[in-house]
Each structure stands twice: as C-alpha cells, then as structure tokens.
Length: 616
Image 1 (cartoon, one colour):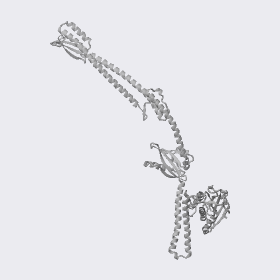
Image 2: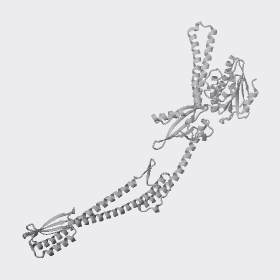
Image 3: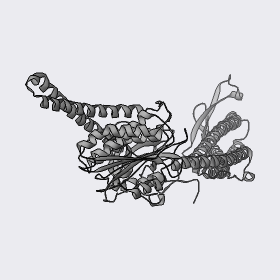
Image 4: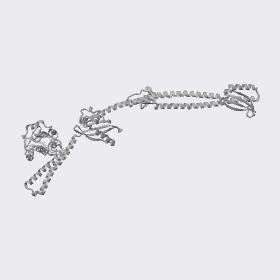
C-alpha cells in the first residue's frame, strides 16, 4: 500500500496534501498550456486571415483585368472565357464568376455547380472602370461567389496542429510533474519514516542520504546529525534519570514513615518496607501492581477505599496541598497523608500516600486526657475535704469538743499533705522534663537519707498496720547525687508500696553495692497486690496508670515516671522492677559510683538476688 496515504477510521484517504499539490500542479500546467496554445492559435488565425484576404485581393485584381479586357473587346471572348473557366475549376474557393456590362447585361458567367450550395459561400461585387482607372467611367461589374474553403482548410489544419501540440506538451508536462512529484514524495517518505522512528524514541536512526539529492540530501544529513546527538543526549539522560530514580526510591524506601506511591489508576508502583510493616504485609511484591483501595484488614474491611474517594472529592472542590485522615490497622493508629503528583504542566500522574504510626501519640493523648481527669479528681477531693472541714471549724468551732477539733485538724493536715504531694509531682514533672534543667549534684552518704525518709513515712505505714524495715550495708561509699531528688524517688517508691500493700503487710528497704561493683543499689520490696506482667513494660511511662485497669487507688500517673527521669536522665543510673500478682513487687534503682559515667541496665543478679533473699 502506498505509504503516502493516511488512514482515518481505517479508511484510506487519497486526497492527501501530496495528491492535492500534484493535482493543483497538473491543473496549473494545463491552464498555462491552454492559454499559450490559444494565443498561438489566435495569432495563426489572424495571420492566416490576413494572408487569405491578400490572396483574394490579388485574385480579384487579376479577374478585374480580365473583365476590363472582356468588356472593352481587346481580346477574343473565347480565349477569355476559356481562361476564366480554367481559373474557376483550378481555384477551390471560386463558386462562380459573372461579368456584367454597364447596362447590367451578363456577358459572361462561369460556375461550379457543386460549390454553389456551400454554406460558407459569400458574394462580392467589384466595379470595373475603363482601363482599370478609378477616375474613368464604369464600364461594368464583376460578381464573385467565394466559398472560403482554403481558409477553412488552413484554419482547421492550424487548429489540429495546435491541439496536437497542446496534447503532446500536456502529456510531457504531466509526465514531468508526476515524475518529479513521485521522486520528491519518495524522498519525503524517506524523511517521514526517519521522523516517525525518531518520534517513537529510536534515537540514533539514520536516513540513507545517498538516495537523496540537493537540499533534501542536506536536510537528511542534518537529520542524521540531530538523531546522533539525541542518542548521546538520551544515553546521558537515561543514566541521570536512572540514578535519580534509584536515589529517590532509596530515600523513599529508607524513611521510617510508610510511603505508598500510586498511579492515576490507583495501582501501587512504589511501597517501602515501613508501609509493608504498618499494613502487616511480609513483602512489597504482594502489593505492587494492586490497587491500594482493594487492601483489606484482618476483618475484610477495605481500609483506604473511602479515604481515597474523599481525597478525589476534595480535588474537585479545591486543590489541597495535603489531605489527612486516620485509620486503624492491625492494632495501630495510622495517620494517612495524601498528596497529588503532577508533572510540570500540571497534569496528574497519581498520588503519594504517607502512613505515619501515631499509636504512641494517640495513647499519650489518651493518657494526658486521663491524667487531666485524674488530677482534676485528685485535686478536687482534698480541696473539697479541706474546704468542708475549715468551714465547719470557722462557723461551728466553738461547738466542737477537743477530740473532734483535733480530728478535724488532723484530717486537714493529711489532705494538705496529699494536695502538696500532687502539686509537687506536677511541678517536678514540668521541671525534670525541661531539657535545660540541671540538678546541683555532690558526693553524699545515702544511708542517713534512707533512714530519714523511712522514718518520715512510717506514720503512713502505721495507719495501715504495715511493718517497714531496712537492711543497709555498712560503710556504703558516697554517691554523686542530688539528695532532694533521691529523697523524692524514695518517697515515691515507698508511697506506692504503702498504697498497694494491704493491712498487716511488710515493706523492706535494702541498700548495698551492686554485684558488678559499679553502682549503689537501693531496693524497695513489698507484699502488696503486685502488677500484671503485661503492664510492667509501661509502668515507667508518664500518665500510665495500672489503677485504671486493675486497682482502684487513684493517682496522677506521674510518680514512677518522675522516678525514672530523676534516676536515669539526671543521675545516669537505672531503674528496675519485678512483680507478681498477689505476692508483691520489687522496685529499685542503681546510682553509679563514678560521677558522670552512665549506667547500663541493672544486672539480673541484682533483681534475682532480691527475690532470693525474700521478705523477712
């Protein structure tokens, strides 16, 4: 099939630009030849007519001389008649000749009968003067009948010649136009093939320029040079783009947030390991090529279908920089951030979905809310108690006996201490969490601090009939510490032991050098209710309260967190815990003997030893 044809709806289209130019060229050449031939014919016709008129004039002149001779009687009439008869027969244009004298009498008439019926016959009358002198009197007239056949034959011969010449020239011009057009079209098709190969990305393709000539050959050589340069440029760009793509994929795959890149059809083209982990998928190949909207959790729910639909709806109304939603998957709370991917012309290429695990933040927010609720309740209880007792004393103090008055004052004192402790915990939390806060530290003996703290807290233990004992190793080395901070640590641990140990229970405080010889170890043992194993990893977290789940004792959830911050962050020590529900708990901490040297995790023998020793 001719490559110059183009196809629209699978039907060949013959009237292409190339064919229209060819037809136009043929029409113009035909019109040009026709105009030239027409003017040539007109010129020949004019010349022929003038020549014919001159020949008729000569013929009339000759006949006029003969007519004058006939009318004047200078020669015998028979000779003149014989001459005229031969002239009529010999000349194809003469149909008849007739001489009339001055009186109108016919003195001679010669004719060819067959020519009298010629449609082209025309008549001409010539007056004869004496001696052919127009100044002399008229002696007669000549009547001629002329057919114009010679003129017609010459005119037709001329027309035929012009037509033959026109047809010959037209055929030659058509062959020339078609030939040149075919050659040019062939060369142009060669160039078009090269451009098409180039447009499909076949950089480096070369047009065979030896088949071309003239400007087309220069054009082909320029095309080949351009194609070679594009091939070199493409190779360089491919290397650059491959490097950039690999770098981008490496970045996306290495970041801790989950990254899912989808095309306009919603199919996943890139997903990193973090996203696979959040979606509880073993390998990225399991999701590549599938649609993120078809992802289902363990319950068979499509987690992202509604989110993606909302994202596309938001694009119809506005063009948000980011689209944020939340979703629960595999026990995790994920924040889903979606952004469009567009090219330089603003056309959509798909979207990128960032998955951020905010389970911990959500839990902290929940714990903060719980903390505020607990603090509000805890603060309201002592304030309400103090307020009611003070109001009673203020308004009815004179009516109270001494015992009741002392009971009221004792209750106010206890509730004030309770309120003070909660406020101190909140203040300590704010202060100890501040990164710029620095404690004043010095080498001090911890033994008096332990004894003083135990002695001050015995009052609370005696209220629940609890026995508190100490076992402090003699000649303990001094420790680089802040005594106020460590006292609060001991008070928190002892206060928890008293709160969670039932009537008649026992609490023991031990202090000794750790087995590794690098730290001083303080342990608080109790026979309380104990802590379930699943809560132990979280009890040092701020706002975390086991009471909300197991116990009924209220609190702020800051005590153990403050213990951990004071010991580990500010004293570079370590805290540890061991507990069993219904048998009791062991809380302790280690302080390094060498100032400024961070502590490692407490050794297992230290805890195991405490368990082995048990409570006396």
